[in-house]
Image (cartoon, rainbow, N blue to C red; front, side, top):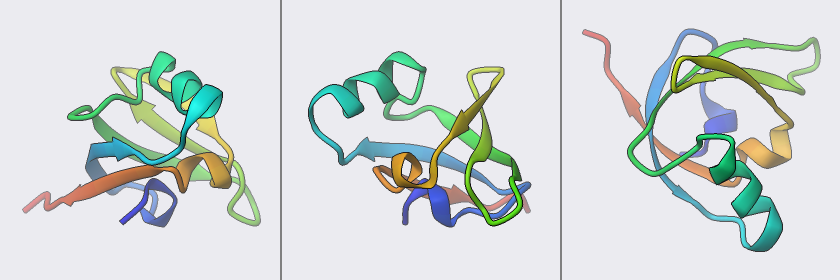
Length: 77
């Protein structure tokens, strides 16, 4: 599953960044690291961009960037 597939309010753990090169490096520099908890806060009309919460701050990502982030959804039960 990738980050762009989460719905607002859902939480997940980042498993890997599938992109390569400068894009992957930029995502990691923004705090999107393996093992980090992430949550979708909201989506723009049309679904792009999305706002995520990671490491205590809000971050906006384009859908194509979010597709490069492999996650594992967390059950909040």
